[in-house]
Amino acid sequence: MPLSVDVICSHPSFLPSLAYYGEALAEVYHTNQRLGANLASQRRWLISQTALALYWGDEGGLTVNRLIEVLTPYKVASPNTIRAFINESVQYGFIEVDPDSRRIRPRYWKPTEVVKSALMEWVGLNLAMLDGIDGRNRASVLMQRPDIVFSLQPRLAWNCLNDPAWREPPPRVALLQNTISGGMVMDHIVSQIGAGTPQGERYLIPPINARRLSERIFISRTHLQRILNKAIEIGVLGWSRRPFESEMWIDRLFIEEYCRWQAVKSHHIDEAFAHFA
Image (cartoon, rainbow, N blue to C red; front, side):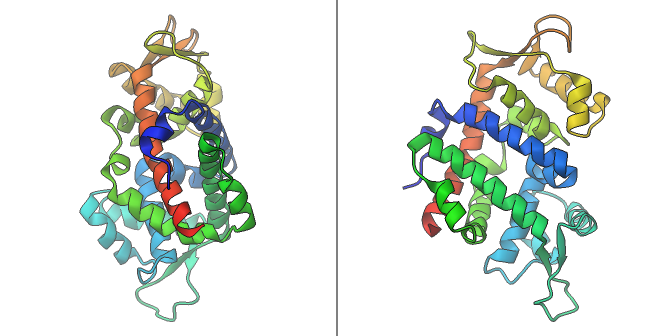
């Protein structure tokens, strides 16, 4: 039986695990900024996971038109955005023409090795988080049977796409997740909370070093400040005194909303893993 969303998000190890997860993803960003962006933006996550599901699933293969057809009912992105995503993925070496397809038109695509490796690492991190909750050995099973990733990925992707609790983050979470690089900023914030406990209705974290963080996630300081100002305006975070110099506070309920949203994805990963393991 896969772990329920309630069990996952309420477990004391889940938030510290998300902190470690965020740090690990930050390494992906640092190694490959463009690939990291596909994990840190909700829109790009949905497009990229659906694209992979078309390739590894029984959907007839990955083509631009098929990807548009599948995503259009969910209003994830416009056709032009999806076409641009595919073009970027080709440009940065994330997909290539599928040699198994003998047709010239439409053009069929397949993921490259760098995407396969990143997906393997990402699934492994998520399975380790689940293991931390119930003490099972999912991550070890993955190491012994790595190809299971390519079986479970389509089921995971379709379940996430069809679940509005994951597809449409809570409004305050969506403010960051739907902003360019906002997911990376959220990962950093959660990594700073770690295993900390709230003080009343707030968590306290060290001041954000704007120069260091903007360099680490490859955005300008102006854009970083814009992201943080949006969050400040809706009351989910702020500084104790001077901005970027004093401790930062994070609203406890906001973190709970974020954890529950992440737990939805974790539940679907557990369900897909249990189906194929």
